[in-house]
Length: 395
Image 1 (cartoon, rainbow, N blue to C red):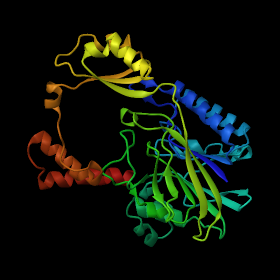
Image 2: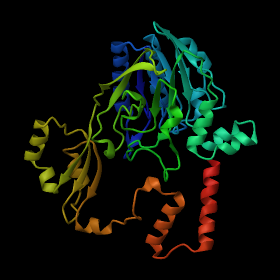
Image 3: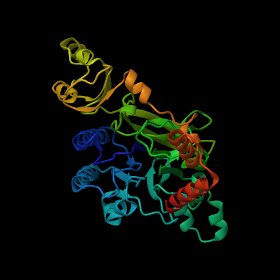
């Protein structure tokens, strides 16, 4: 059975006040062409369909057109809600759309019913677990004993998955949208102090887990034979400068029958995606970046001047009307910054070590110390911790 896996469409997203809808229409058309060419049994969209929980009318129209065209191919489509989506809005009309082979994830309730597909090797159950927080999982548990077991994101995911009742002999595929420990992030994902990390072991037993949330395509768990079992497809488009070096793609997954280890045979490959405009950074003195020689060099290297360009000037003095002058050459200039002695001296470093390994309290304490040149006292610590606890409990 063939699955085409993508995620994090972020339809309606703007970057540096530039709408990405035209880019998204282009890349969705590319995904549609891949579906027509590869003829998968199903397309898996693993969350963050929209960029906002209340998407614009134009963003809704783009998704509507995409889903209609997909349904015309006869390929099943599974659409999961992510942390940027409203689970209720994604679920709306889901029961009607099932008649066209489009399956929208429901609002998390602690109850699961898979969609069963069939091939020459037997049945495959496709499960959808929308983005959840520990409080959401606890709210759906019936006993205090179960609720007490949910203390973090890993235990929340483990408890949620425990409510999925596998049918012996069937292969199982899961769509999920969480941050799995060890995944390489970019600047585009939301993650505070590593508190929302999920251990990959919670997915043991699934033949394939189609993940969303992290924008770089990567495997986060393999079986003993080295086959990718838990994978992020990454975004189909580059959504920040930190993603400039990413090779965007779709993930094609082919499942065979069950093997001796109890899991299905699997083959995973990438299908490259080409954006309408690339994302890149150029750095140097203003005179160099606007020179005809530099422009010719870029074109010779296959770099387009209308790419989404982030410019970093090394001039010691600000260049008058730099943005206006640069846009005359680079029409899709996204951001202008300076890298010189003055700006380097202005940089403030908050603490040491990796941010994702620190708690929100530690991060705030380091920030407070850098700003005030003193440590938080006991009363201030208690006050801040109460605020942090309240925020996370609400989430």
